[in-house]
Length: 248
Image 1 (cartoon, helix red, strand yellow):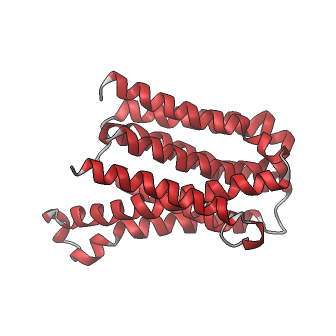
Image 2: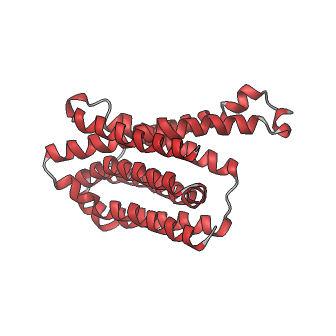
């Protein structure tokens, strides 16, 4: 990677860190404003997953199936479905953590720790994959950062409301630390292999999908539909525009 690409990666990571640092303020905003931001963020995140991430999984699965050494062990259809299964695992893992943390046998502090673990993992995976995304195109990496920042809007406000003291004193600092760790890991091991990048991105996409469906989609009465649709169509427009321009 060129030095300017690492600078872009650090700048985008800084955006995510700032989102964590100031996200506790969202929980203090009026409910109507929180609904607006949540709806907009949910629309941005879910459109990114379906317009960019899902096609990338399909393309990546086809590329994996074309590798002859893998065909010796697995049929092509199974190989092509592997990355979608990885995204499913992302949903299952984060959902399982939610179920465990909501158990009556768990104290509030343990509940908080499990959510911190899950969100720290998301931050680490984001930062770990970011430099490789920047090297393939800064526009996608910027939109990717917007989608993950929208994801933060949905998750951090819940933690900030439930555990305001712990979130402000410990959690947001830990989140930023994991962003730096992921970026440093990518720097030490760059370039990341295409297979590693595809698996990591698929797993992360599953976690993002779960958050959007859990925090926004099921709560129709809590959704500001115009803002949700604005997020969906604005992100879709930017992604499709970049796809068209990139193929000219």
